Image: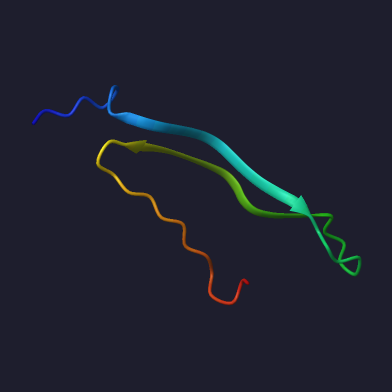
Amino acid sequence: MAVNINTDILLHVTDLEVRFPSPSRYTKARWIVPVNHVSFDLRRHETVGLVREPGSG
């Protein structure tokens, strides 16, 4: 089966950033940025997973 890279893209993400206000008033950081400038393509028949650092909550 031939794979056409252009038509098999189901999801295209460019420079994804996730941030939210820091809940602590004891730190200088005003924002928590768990995801910063992530880009990816998800193609047909591929699987994507999100793995967090152990102990991060």
